[in-house]
Image (cartoon, rainbow, N blue to C red):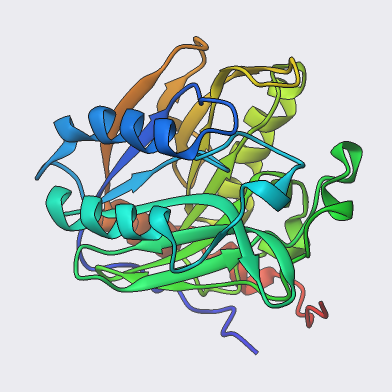
Length: 269
């Protein structure tokens, strides 16, 4: 059981960059080249860079010809980029495992540490559950004193899975969330921040994919009150950076310790 009375907070600020971009459909080399150009301006200016879901392919249901092993070219690229930029880099990609294909978020630090999280909630309306294996657990990442919970797209709709048991400070959600459902995306990002007393970073793609679906972006960085610190609803590519205040988070948690009144439960996956 986690301590629901805890008001723990990081001791130092964290600079975070959101990268909202169109994607080349099912073309990993082209997407890696594109992001390398987009990220160059961030060298030495940020601590964490967040890319969209399936950033090398778009939201594809054809993993057979596109999946990489974890120790594949995209991980090699992420490690090089993190080292050169001096910042952690994260985003999800189609990955092949012994159990099958997964939608895997990789989180790579400048020092070369590699963390991963496999998308738990598969978007059945697109048939994702027919092509990919669901993740079996949450993942918590400790980076520069910040406790980070990585999630992928549809996970955002499931508050019990994302419930903050006083074990994280920042929730990341990488997505390919269609423009037709942009309102729920925006509201859910704010709701998850408010109910969990944490920062939430949501990064979505823009443009149109190979199946004809349009994406509005609406990438946001939301504080623990649900207020947007970064908000890009225009539907155009965007790279934005802001600083998460450790002191502000700690102060608010001490002044408004809603976790002390939370219902206790165990999550069974």
